Length: 152
Length: 230
Image (cartoon, rainbow over all chains, first blue to last red; front, side, top):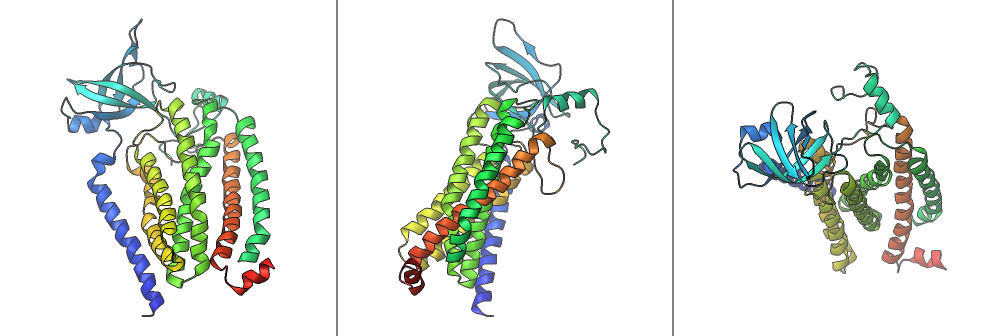
């Protein structure tokens, strides 16, 4: 083996070794790398009531209730399998709306998740308002060239 | 290589400036506002290209460092050294524009999200590379040590790229894909793609200028430098 081949294998070895180490570490720390837990993950493994964590999912349509005169809101967060009720008092981000993604930071109190921070999640799709309106009124069939969630 | 850099850098720079101007006009003026995010989505025209190139430049550095190590090519080490500060500033720009976008849309400047955290690690890798190189006086030793750092750090690039797919993340997944249609309307996507081209040209131009300086510094005692400068 020439010296150059030796160096080539050394570089390949560094990349493979560091890659394997990173993969193992990230797999082991999976639960810590996750930014939030989905409602079904919480249902499967109920956190203790003093444990602070983030809950993420979709704001269920038609579930948002505001108490007039206060900043108190209640709504349901769903991952289309399980649902968790969330209680929050404060100003909601502009993008917060029903049917949109949300990440809430707080703790479980009984069966209700009491949040002290609400973050809105937006998706990777961008379109002008006219297109969004047209799509809403007249959804295209799934295989007509328009990207859908199931399609790609 | 020196002659190539001197000849081509102004061309790349000029094209980059034109493309960037047209793309910014397209993105900030011509493109319609987004149905959800209104005008705030326009940060994407700067944020996504600088983020892409913060990763492309690091990958280029690692590849150049590997070529330099394996084939003992001095120019490759010089390319890696010339690229590092450009990568670092684009990483800072990524984090900065991302924070400005995060506050109005998500509701927070910073979240310890896997995507954001791994991009911050990239900034530390860029700084670490520059620091290590500056700390070692002997150029050959500096080349070798910093090359190993660049190659080790490249493991972070797929982590940044796929963090949004592997883990639950506040950051949305990629809009443009290597294969398949982008999740963006045609009227909005062309300035974004043009901006990517503009940043590729920008990187080429600035890298060649820096590479020229790097080569002159390294070879200051060589006879060709005396000929070029006389």
